[in-house]
Structure formats: C-alpha cells, structure tokens
Length: 324
Image (cartoon, rainbow, N blue to C red; front, side, top):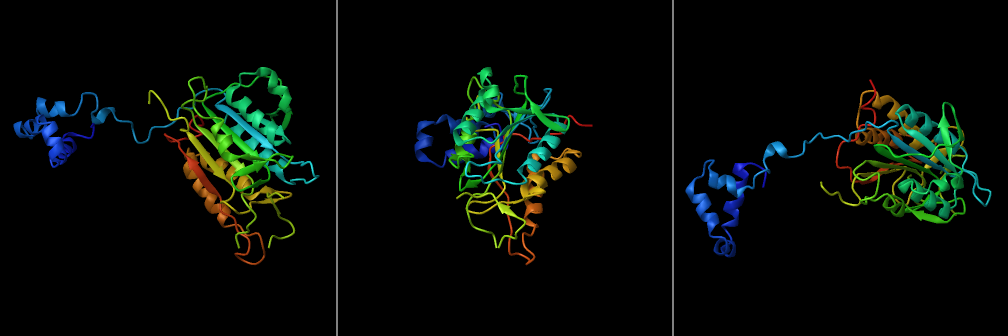
C-alpha cells in the first residue's frame, strides 16, 4: 500500500499464488485481468491517500523552536556516603553546562543524589507537575559561568537532555548511597503518555558510569574508574541513550580533566554543531575518539569503547538548527 502502482500489482500477483486467498477474494483476479496499466480498478486496489507524495520524508527533522530549546538536567554524583569522591566530575558537569547552554538549553544540576532521590528527581523532571519539589533536590541552574540556586520553575521545551555522572555497574547507575538505579527505569520514566509534555519530542540520555569491572585491555595512577564496590506514538519512541562504555566494562575519568566520554562529547558537540551535524553522526565521532585514547603508557593496555545502547529516534535530531 502506498508504494506505487507496480509494487501494488506485484503484491496482488503474489496474493494470487495462494489458493485460499484466491478463493476468498476472487475480485483480485478480475482487477488484474481488466487492465495492467493505470486504471480506476487498479487505483482502487491501493486505497486513496496512500500515495508516494504523502509518505514521510526521509530527512524529516525534529522541530526545535522553543526558547529555551528545552531542559538539560545533570545529575552529578561526586561525594559518596563511604567518603568515596569522584574527582573530576565537576569538570564534566561544567563542560556539559557550557555546551548545552550555548546550544540554547536551560541547564539544571542536582548534586549528590541517593538512589531514591535520583528516581524522585527524574520523575519530577518528567512531569514538572509538583512545583514544590524543586527545592527538595537542591537544583542549581547554570548562569553564565557558574551554577547558582534555581528559583524559577522549569518548563519543558522541544527537547530534553539528561546527563548522569556517577558510579555504576552493568545496566545501572548508583546513587551516593551506592544503591543501584537501572538505566531502563530511568528511560522508562520518560515514556510517552497522553499527558506528557515530551510526547513526540526527542529525549537524549548521556551516561558517564562504569558498566562493570572489566578493563578493556592496568589503570595508571592518574585515572579513576566509575565502578562500585503517528496520531499515536510508541511509548518508548524518540529516545537515545549513549553510555560511556560497553556492558561489563569500566569507564575512565581523569581527576583533573574529567572523563574521556563527556569531554569528548562536549568537544565534538562544539565543533560539529557549528556545521549542523545531527546527534547520531556526532556520537559516532565521539565513539571513535574515545576508542583512540590510551589509559596506559603501554599501547592497547587500557582502552574504552563508548556505546549508543538504545536509539528509538523517529526523526533526525539536529541540536543546532537555530544557530547561524
């Protein structure tokens, strides 16, 4: 249906190779025998309104026109309850804030959240229904060159970015109490509903956390690892999840310069958004750049491979379409 007259005819021919179909729908043969060229009978075989001109365009893009473009929420877990400190994570949070504010997003940060607080904060940002909760999560807003106390109630725009900087294990990220919150639960918090302000809008999750204890072929002293002790849309459409490392492996973070993944991501966004490249293309360059880094003086001893683990984007996402 809707793929042109020739394709429609071939499909009808194929149907007639089945005896049961032929017996049940004898009119199919009549349609084909009357005229193999374009005719009212053949046209009726393909319902009106399903022609090529009305099919979605291949290069259809998400429309990002709101001001701000949307929210960028950063959950930045630095100080854990066992006195573990994720040195360098503030550098990541700052770079993310700089880049996404430049792209036109309102950037908010929640610092040092337990598992339950992370879950509650994400539910709050998914709905933005309970305004009284804003202060409960000690939300800071990026203003110029620093994070300050946020006073204004946030609103959703045309896109949503969620950045989680924490320790993790396979399939989960950890709160500062070391309790795990599954990545699947995080993304499903933002599933489409009739009431959701983000229905049909792109939701991008950028996760800097280990996904296990394996090292991809020694960690030098100056590196730390983020590991622990249509008229309708599918519920889980319009989501992209990019993670610093593949399953079962560590993700590395420099205590001064920040993590390999986040720093590469921010650099690539700055460079490539200027030429209006889409997010999937940019993430491909991020994956390559991270894969080229060495965590040891011995070549190939310590490597990392970033991963796009889930991508249900239905359109092309260009974060910089509004830029000159």
